[in-house]
Amino acid sequence: MKTSNPRLKPMSRDQVLVAHAAELIARTSMSQDGFAQALNQQLFALVPERAAQAHVPDLAALAAGNDVQAFLRGSANWLKRVQRWLVGECDIPAWVEEAWVLALEPEYQERCVNELASRHGLIGARQVSEQACPVTAFGQLVMRLGQAVEAGSEVLADGKIDSGDLPHLPAFIDRLLAVESRACELRRLAENVRDGALLRRVSC
Image (cartoon, rainbow, N blue to C red; front, top):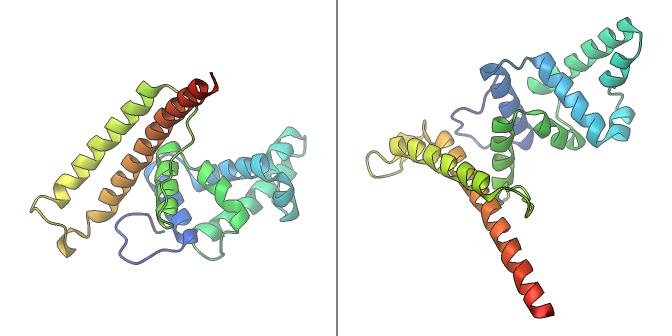
């Protein structure tokens, strides 16, 4: 199964989604079944009607019932469906994408969002409310900066970026995207406070 380790060829959105899920499953205690159940939960939280139309079993509803066989049958069928997506046997429908990303654990979710956004020249920054803790946001930025420096030290050891750095570039790019994302979140928070103060001043 593919992971999101060094990739030299452009990947489709499906492949990006699969790569991050596969990496999550390979590197953590999350199993394919665990990911399938997390995806199922997210689908029925986000698009329950669409999921039902696509004959996705509602595992939470089945678990709440008394029919154990129906739950086991539904779980097995759903796992097989997710496995076909994971091995690239079937394309992942567009309506599944958001739930797929949310089913990833935070670290993998962040990298997946950043990679998907970067394909369109965007930054995968979250919307941060004025009530959010700026110290926490800044701490996340500093941590991502440290990771970028660590990844960049290998790439820039010879003072240049060239084909010899290809094995290290995916990780370096991931870290830089994370820095951009966190910096953008903090900038937006600061801008929102500034703009709000300016509006109040003008209205007085």
